[in-house]
Length: 310
Image 1 (cartoon, helix red, strand yellow):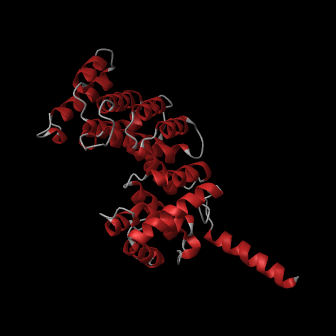
Image 2 (cartoon, one colour):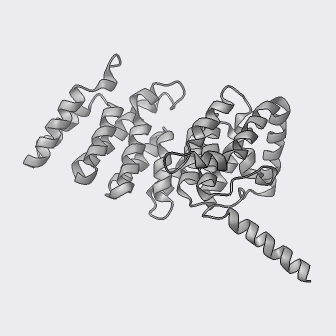
Image 3 (cartoon, one colour):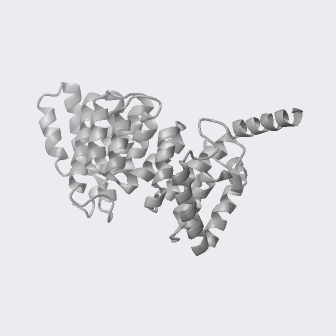
């Protein structure tokens, strides 16, 4: 009996030590887990070297954490370099999340967050539909900002209609997940997602919430990103650019605190009709706002992102 109690306590401590806001593994249904394991094993058979390379990075997460210069070590960049050009990369990157017991996982909280969010960000680049259940499970069950943001980015890149609708709803829902969802939405270049961010502007966010929103608008509507093949459905790309630009301008007009961030977003989005919208807004603007709009118009007139493009 005493042995059983000690074992139970040890297991509880083990789970707690992995701790924080996120689980030790991804809470998948038995059916989804079985399908994912099949995909992992199949990818491992085709490209064991990539799995070994990811395992090597995972085992070094604590060591790398000690070398960080900011809050977190840039794990996503490291992992992207390790798996670049390998077709089974998503499964190799997701295995430590769905089966952490197979790995030497980090013990420090900052290393754990950097690793898990980095794995998600890097996995999302491959746009592998088989990975979607992992992203959905994390979005449904986690609240840790960076991990949740990574899962939203990854799922948004897949662009499935039902998932985009779900993310759009979460982005507009006030609560502990909203900031992270908005921060990750920039990778979802769909009209429904753009309208969702536009609606959030009307909530008048402040502080870091406003910064996350402006950066998401910038990433989603980026003229350079939308020019990338398959970044957005061809018929939606011009609409996404216009919607995000209008939303950023609305933010500029209504939120003095976020004005600089909104201006930066408008420069990156570089929607062709923005000068006309600025002129329209100036007609009813206060003297202070009119001066700010003149400065914005001048900045856009010398927009370096338009060089060679428009």
